[in-house]
Image (cartoon, rainbow, N blue to C red):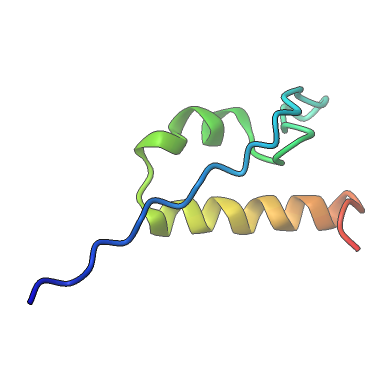
Length: 64
């Protein structure tokens, strides 16, 4: 039996699309390159991006 195919990880976009002075989206915490490349990333790469987004949000005091 073939391995089940993993569904693509959804975009973290929250429809608050504006870049700050560091070119990081204030909504999802992705940089421009990460936003542009998202649709071509595999799930492992998407997990890496999401981890960086989480770290950015924490550094900016946006996580409790």
